[in-house]
Amino acid sequence: MATSRIPASDAASEGVEAIVSGFERLGYIADRSLATALYLVTKLRKPILVEGHAGLGKTEVAKVLAAFLGTRLIRLQCYEGLDVSSAVYEWNYQKQLLAIKIEEGSDKTVEEKEKHIFSREFLLERPLLQSILVEDASPVLLIDEIDRADEAFEAFLLELLSDYQITIPEMGTLHAKHVPYVVLTSNRSRELGDALKRRCLYQWIDYPNLEKEMKIVRTRLPGIEEELARQVVGYVQSVRGLNLSKPPGIAETLDCAEALLALGTLRLDEEAMEQTLGCISKSVEDSAKIKAAGRGFAP
Image (tube, rainbow, N blue to C red; front, side, top):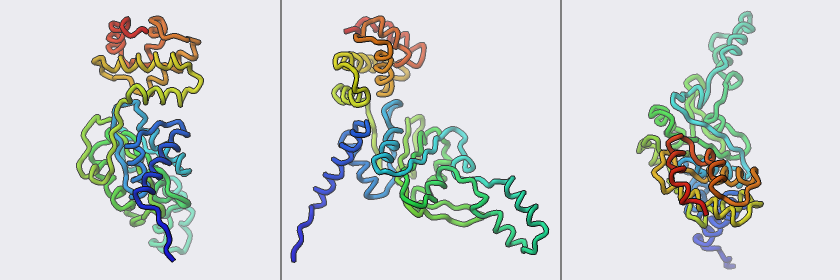
């Protein structure tokens, strides 16, 4: 008896739409391009590299994906000088020394003692190893701001991102029980290596247009008046047109809108702009440029 099958293209389209609507319910407005990329992450189990300017919701992608999938989020925040002991594992030396003292009088062989103190019982698991050893379901692994880490650490990641395994010299190679969904973010403070990029899907998040940013503000701040939301979004979008060292992102738009609500302000006038300038400017030089152009922004 013949059975009807849903065409693969239709199933994929439904999956993408499910991500768009599911993310929106969780407060994140994802366009179809991003939703398609995340759908492929779930199907192909390839990492995704999300790049874009600061404050545009790159980190939130991983957080909301974990909530959408109903799984655990494991986060590694990268920084200059990040090494294996902070990102992957290190041995609990104090506990190992105590175990050695306890077993001094035992009849175990040297090999048996070494095997014991270099077992998982004495292992301090950091985020990357945690993502490999999760027992119940695939977690979302967020490797945040990978561009802040150095090239040596980036090279170390290749084994994890290629084969989802980590090698510990004293224990051997540990394989992922459940392949994690991996999201890497970058603000492009430096160019990442080609070897890393080849292992990842890629998504660029740009500044939103007026309509999308309005939708984001309405979703995140459902109590805001429509006119005030329009004024705030229009103001921030105009500020982005200035030659600033750090243009405001979506996070700054939301901060500005929340600040105005907290101040009980119903209209974005020059006084309100002055009061909330610290929400959208992060340097004295940028503040000066915004103030100089401020009169033209007032509605």
